[in-house]
Image (tube, rainbow, N blue to C red; front, side):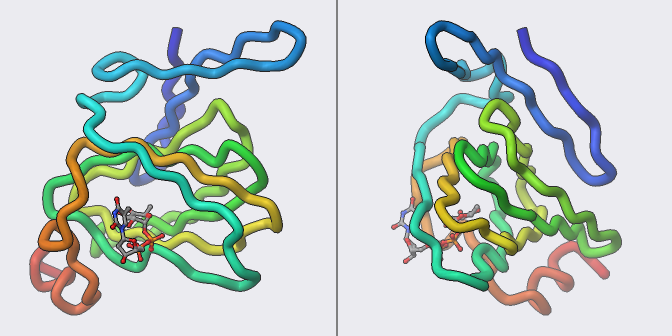
Length: 138
Ligand code: T46
């Protein structure tokens, strides 16, 4: 079972949360996650006031879960922006290709789990905001 919560620029995926002397969440490729998962990475022990992300991906799609703590992700498609707070371990934000994103307001102890549609390739990143705006034509 999965639920989709539409946001202005993207959507949040709710994955199953099974209660059994605690909780267990899971996700499957091409089911809860709308692509074949080729890479998983996690981010933790982020310093206070850090701003991460500040880039987009040319081809890679991702779903970002905040499995502990809380963060705000600012999405930007070159025209509109949206700030989304993630603080539930069974909710992941879909990050489409060519969606500029920044991660801010990390609560102490936050752990992010990210599933991605491709392996790491630095040439898939656009890290310059002006170059991004030129690419999306704004
Ligand atoms: C993203 C957001 C949500 C690797 O070598 N392999 C990897 O799979 C990843 C993800 C990163 N790296 C290296 C590249 C940099 O030298 O780790 C270093 C930190 O990466 P970056 O500054 O891009 O980290 P964030 O937190 O700004 O962004 C990360 C992901 O890189 C990015 O794809 O969308 O999380």
